[in-house]
Every structure is written in structure tokens, then in C-alpha cells.
Length: 75
Image (cartoon, rainbow, N blue to C red; front, top):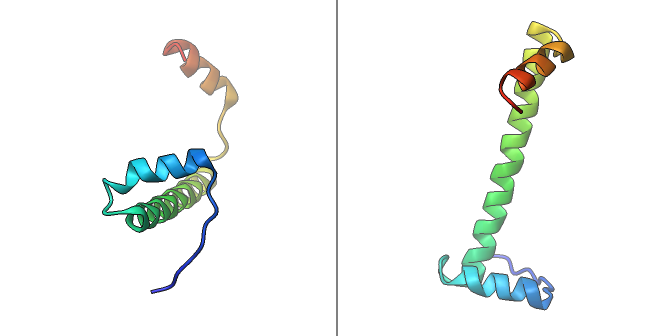
């Protein structure tokens, strides 16, 4: 298993300490954070891919339709 050194300011140190008890220690919290970031990146890439495929199949978004939907649903 590799060892990595991370410099943390006081605020990040306090956050790490807060999370450590939930994740089996400081290393566990950091490992979980890395996994969470990687999962988020994969979800973002999958969404971009999905939207690109959708755009290729259905064409670009019609801004007038978006405006109408936003007004209809109070967005």
C-alpha cells in the first residue's frame, strides 16, 4: 500500500478529524473521499455522454421550449 503526504490547513484538519470517526480513521476518510470524487467524476462523464447522444438523436435543445417549461413550472 502506498503512502501519500497531504498538507492540510486547520479547517481541513478539523474536517478530516470529524469524518475520521465515521470511516475507521483518517486514512479511511481520505480513501472514501477519493472514491467519492472518482464516482462523481464518472457520473459527470456519463451524463455528458448521455446528453451528447441525446443531442445527436433528438437535436439541440429548443430554448423557447425551455423557457415555456420554466414558466409553466415556476423555475
